[in-house]
Image 1: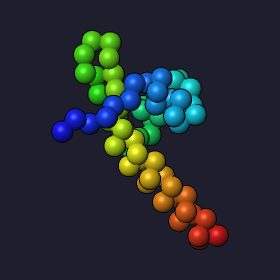
Image 2 (image 1 turned 135 degrees about the horizontal axis):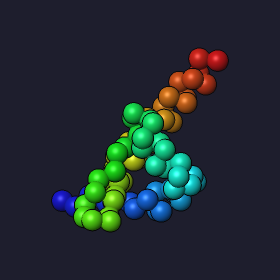
Image 3 (image 1 turned 45 degrees about the vertical axis):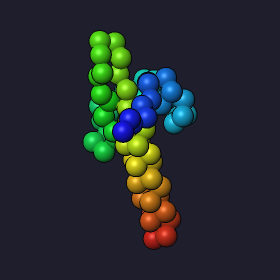
Length: 68
């Protein structure tokens, strides 16, 4: 089974952030999916891990709104 992957430009665009912000999130956000280096000069993120992170962020936001 092959997993879908995203390159840095694709991921940054889909999250509406800059590449700099993407790398900063990788370094500073402990729960943000970490990149995988699949060869020299090629770094990817697994799409399913990114989607799970997004789902988790949405649940946190919904919980915070519900508590207000």
